[in-house]
Amino acid sequence: MRPRGKPGPATWKTLESRKVYSTRIFDLHHHRRYHHQRGHHDFYVLEAPDWVNIIPLTEDEHVVMVRQFRHGTEDFTLEIPGGMVDPEDLSPMAAARREMREESGYDSDDIIELGKVHPNPAIQGNYCHTFLARDARPGAKIQLDTTEETEVVLVPLASIKELIAGGEITHALVIAAFSFFHFYNPPA
Amino acid sequence: MRPRGKPGPATWKTLESRKVYSTRIFDLHHHRRYHHQRGHHDFYVLEAPDWVNIIPLTEDEHVVMVRQFRHGTEDFTLEIPGGMVDPEDLSPMAAARREMREESGYDSDDIIELGKVHPNPAIQGNYCHTFLARDARPGAKIQLDTTEETEVVLVPLASIKELIAGGEITHALVIAAFSFFHFYNPPA
Image (spheres, rainbow over the protein chains, first blue to last red):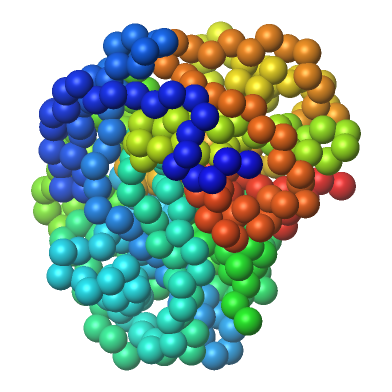
């Protein structure tokens, strides 16, 4: 295979870009692009900071998960803590630790990176960075923003596979995180 | 754990909804919602049809992948075939087979479902349905829409794990698909 960033087919030239809509989570940008074989086309991209998520694992092998209402699906999901990298965060890892503390009340100083993914390269340029927190312990103060409503749920690590296979855990970025842990990049 | 759809924390009431922007891939909707403890807030949701992706596997254990330019990341990605369920598609499985034919030129009549995920429950309500096509063979006519530029790449199945671990395959929905195949719901 060709190295990344050394494309075979020709790329597109951006002729015009503008922000067409702004929200708290992302901005919607319009790009007018030209391809010498395909002509002029319009593309829409969500601009957002990088995201993070983190698997907080307790000493007795439970995952600290968060049951929360999600406004896209209009239903409750079972997720690991996660969110946006804020400008104040020193690194994606620091952002993941902050989100774990704020959303679950658990903390750890033994955090490692498991991987990173593009949530949706067709319409977003950002990464989601995935971490594992070992020896997670309660003690931090849960701090939700004004729109979040969550419930902390301790889930045995041994049951995660079944929860994914059975459709109880459906969030693609959460499944990607566990797939690094279980199979693609398991911690030593 | 509580059964799905039987929430603990109270849910939100939608006071007002409207489409604020429309694109070829999704519409952006604004919802004004009220929560008895959290007050009034604005939420933005991308409305889109369900998506599909499919792992076309040849008899000699190669995955038929597509290298394509993605306008979110402004770079080439290595993906499996996938796309939107069109109104004409009889089912998500039919949509996945059509996308496989159109994007890779391979076809198969031995297709099974591996699972389905929510691409991003925070801002989207749709599912991405994931399939495996066994005994995929060339012969269909590649039909790209006018904005797609792709290159078909045959990747040994045995090297997929390394390509995900090494960051060559980064698309979260592609990783979720392979994670069902490899670990969460492997075919019998």
